[in-house]
Image 1: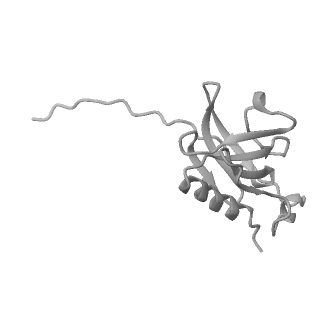
Image 2: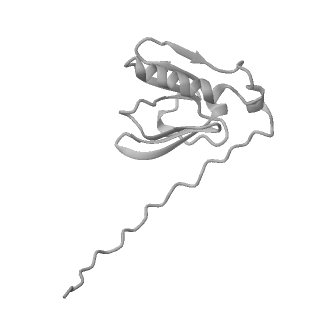
Image 3: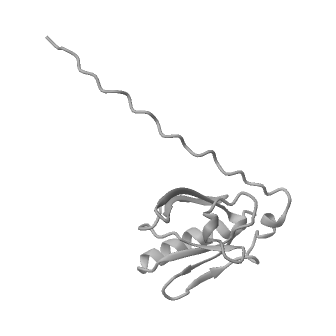
Length: 135
């Protein structure tokens, strides 16, 4: 059976956005593969705002939550394996869900689960424009 965490995170994210709330995820920053701004880690955790106004290119797939955002004015690609997501909740009300005992959670604790973050995309060089004489 597939783990339910990715489905729950996607569903709760959509529900929070539909209700004009600000979705945040709590992340265990010391799980293998986590790429987050280290200067904002506190007690081994970091809370990330994943609202559409705060991130670019948010992807919540079966293996990870990933996006680009600015932290202290510096752009960064963020990658959070599903095993590192501790909770998703609304900043305003605290409504949401914590994870750890949901169906399929045992997969994240097994040694077989080892997602690798994708290589960051390199910006493509635009071809130089050129003019041609047409007669």
